[in-house]
Length: 230
Image (cartoon, rainbow, N blue to C red; front, side):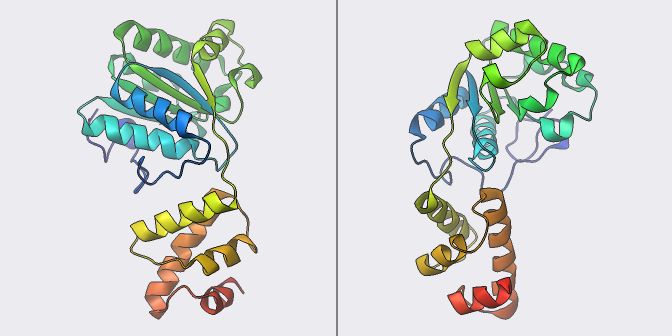
């Protein structure tokens, strides 16, 4: 295990640029504050929201900040980890912060539910922090182990609201700026009117536009972007 912000347990890397400074918070200040406090001191926080609302971004940001402060951290992306044996997280209760993403992925999996129940109790007993995200609130997860379901319900529970178009534009502009790329407002609004508003898709599209801009030595004007989309 390592406490550097670049590399975490089981070879999972933190996403580049996924920090608190680059998270666009619109109607989510209370969620960000709670997650950030968990990166600094003992706190159990459950965050739920739609896909693309920024749940994973917040977990990466918390792990990065905690690791930079010297805390021992681990990130568990259950979309991938559900394929592993639950024994993979044995001993994680000795860490200072564990972040569990997409916990609905293990609902009904008895081995994983028992493993997370044990992890929860161990982290609580040592005064550590636990962050959990899901697409639904605790009561809607269909967790088979009643004790684990009650533990999740007892956490500080927050809904992460999805961004509106202004928020999406601000997030894209921020991510473009972090890459040294200028995204004019008119181009950003052109994109939002013509492609999926899912933030995962938009960020992937921005990466493609950045590569094309470098390859062609062109700015992200509407005509250039229109040609690329066509």
